[in-house]
Image (cartoon, rainbow, N blue to C red; front, side, top):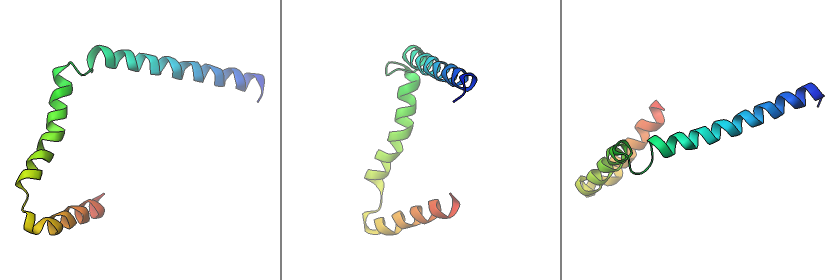
Length: 76
């Protein structure tokens, strides 16, 4: 590498390290496990999965699963 290129690369690396540090600090201040927003998102993600687990028609589970798989493959 040329000295100019190496200097620019080192600047990028230091900026990336600073960004990672700032991101972790932001998460610790505003998005940690103690915030209501974190638990709301967790419940909205896990809640429907638990509901489906208990309410799914077990006789047709393979048909329902294949339908969901096919829809995701076709439209993804």
